Length: 431
Image (cartoon, rainbow, N blue to C red; front, side, top):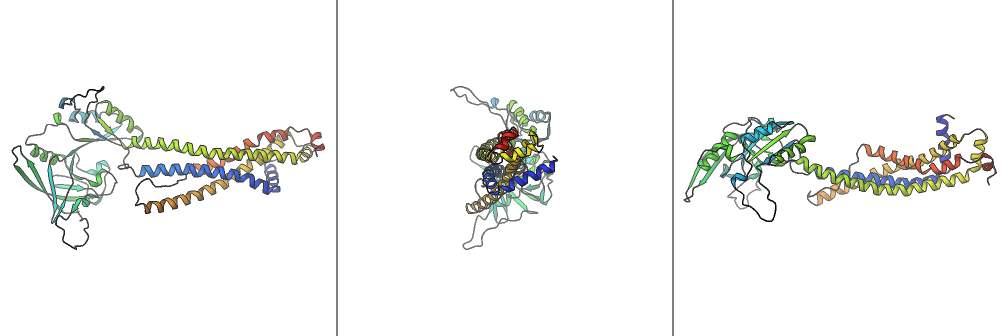
């Protein structure tokens, strides 16, 4: 028999018992829909959780901080300056020498009292000095102006203007709106306190030459300056020259080639005695948790498919009993055992295939309802927390239909073998 003959015969046999096939396929539909819905829910929750992580936009970055010793045992030892692993210029060179590291950026904060003002507005916040002349070198882009920084020129984050407020609001005045900082000249007042209680002040004017595009990370709230200028300010606060070989930098950002090696490089830096944090390690932890959740969810759906498999086996067994004489006639006219086996396996696989297609469609509809309800719940709740969402991966429908078809094929194997091994004479005599 040709392959097309087998397909035609299988479709004809299934269409002769539409009611029984439909009821059997419904079990497969339920199981497949459960697999699609639950796995998609796990994938959706994973995406929702990772997308809301602060600073998750850059997975190739490692933030490094000075290392502090860890003491074992119940007795705590007082930490001295010699115990701290400083981020010295030597450390910078050591980080650059690690294979896979593409860039090392020094970050130094203003370490003293700083007041920011713009006309009648005041602001809180801090300034960060970096050893760069252009922030575009670390992947930051300008929404307004440029990303180049120099002495007296600063670039601010997209949300930095939200730090401004009116210190003397008038009664019944209009709601305050953050100012547009592009091109503005910010007045900076530094305040230093001496041991005898006296204060000294120093004033600067900084021109905003660029406003960064939103990153949903640290850069949105920073004011970037040149490292030399911040060092000059900090030396005025301290009343002495700063020796970075002894005192070290506040923070260092290490950029690597790929997110695949970022955790390994972070471990190398930690082994050197420093503290290292990377968003990728958080993402990997979340992915591991949700991967386990998807396996559990998929297992629950697979149990429903197992129940459906028993239904397919029962349907095929009853079909063989009803068609015993038909099998005998087919063998009498020349059908081989393999022909009979192929026909009944094809019918069982066909039931699984139809149920799989229906289950994917039902699962897709359920996911659409979940996403609609999840969006409305998020809006009602103010947008806080992980959103209830379902996301169907491109491979899941294909896998679900294939798996359902395979379940049908396996379920029909025993009944099909019984049909194929029937003795023609006995089958023709069967009533």
